[in-house]
Length: 587
Image (tube, one colour):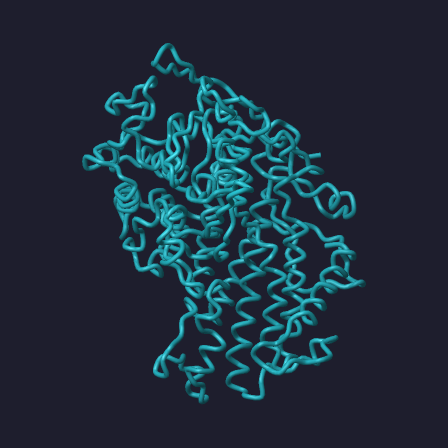
């Protein structure tokens, strides 16, 4: 981190402390130094809020636009340009360097001053809230180092390297010219921070009765009232023990994956199993996991503001808007059609009988391609003659024969380029029209329950094979596909459940389908070390009388080099600090 960034972090820290009126203890007039704080729980929590706002969880697709799952009709979109060959160490839309180190600097300043804060005149309550805040801060430091590792780790001279580890704050006299730590050193430090945090935080933030107050506080006279103020459900949505387990699992999955190979699949499966167990086992996979985003009753009435919804492990609350629909609905519904799913992704959805469309037993007909398909396809992607489930149940024509701008390439700035529009993440009952606007609530998950079960399935299959473990990889995939609507006993899954390689392909495909448009595939493709340059495809649909004709076409080439499996260190940092070394291949 450079000196300017350090000063900016300190300014933000001071502003946070001074801007927030204390809602839990008497407000303090002068907050120039940490040592002057007295019982400012809400203000201290706001300091950590400076880190939370830097978490890289966009509500809508971004990185997907640089994969084989989607393109955009926005000619200036940075991910479209990236996928077309303009990705450099200077122009890098997945750069996390500045934001992550800014957040880490805030956290380190906080940790170095936490014991100087008089949290309360009640020593037991002070201990409770101090433990909570320390745990949250340590976890955030580990999480941001994880995101740095994901976005900037890579090989230098063939050796896998990580990023500079920061566990103390920097100031004007600090030596900013620091080399990168090894990947393994970063892995170890992240695990240490997460473990240290887990020892201080509850598994989940829930209110407890007197008999359930943790012994270390109860024996000192701590009450349920004080514990619930310090570590109860009002903190829901902040980092807790389950989220810590989740990041240990995500880190170990990345490290075990082919692009890294520094962790065993057995350990990755063990960490993922801890998350699955924390969730209550396979019963945590419910029918809500499939189309949670467009279930009005669930989104508006089945979710409490203080409780993370059952489809998520970590979320960013609810957002009432029609902006997402304004960006992504087809033009006839007042949208700009920004995210266009590819034919590549459409082809990944199996038939309703569970067979992939490439299998002769599937019954797939490429001139009647949407009949008999996995029900998730119609929920996630709007295809030609598909329905938007609004008050009118509008049928949308996306083919070239359309007589409006919904058709492919009818208007290059707002029409689909592939013959498809995105439905997933959107509320089909929202209306972005300026004259009759209707905003709707949207759930904004950061990490969904389904993602972690798929993470477990991947690691368990690699470690033990498809049918070993409780649950097994097979059990997880069967449950997900059953809720998705696969029929006939899922004969295809049954036919491959003894084949580790075929199960790997299915797990990766299920991950692709179930997490599509959630900014996961960009990183999955890289950790799997597979080809990044598959061209994005679409469909040209014309009519001969009343008969539609389907022609499958290339829409956008992908220009990724082999070395771009690993993302670059920012060129500006390399230029300023000679001790930093760039990842192989990047200039």
